[in-house]
Image 1 (cartoon, one colour):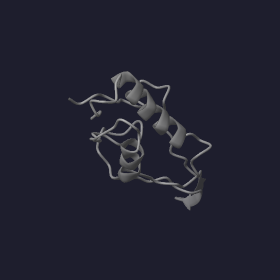
Image 2 (cartoon, one colour):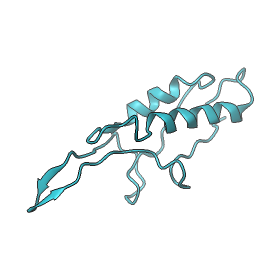
Image 3 (cartoon, helix red, strand yellow):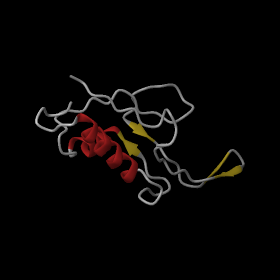
Length: 105
């Protein structure tokens, strides 16, 4: 939700989007670093003009849409007879499903 005295609403939404994109850029995340719903909520709650946040989905692309509390990123590892690469979790801001921010009235 956006505080009524912080208008226009589009600027608050853009600021929220920018915070997420910047915080989850490849230069800001480590390999094997998990993503927590609480981390996203805290980032958004600190955006000027945001009075409340409702996170409706947090999931890895290609998996079922769900509200996971943690998205696990693996470090490089030996698994089932093969080396598995490390994972870095970032937001696909360019994709249509990457970030969906809406105003709740």
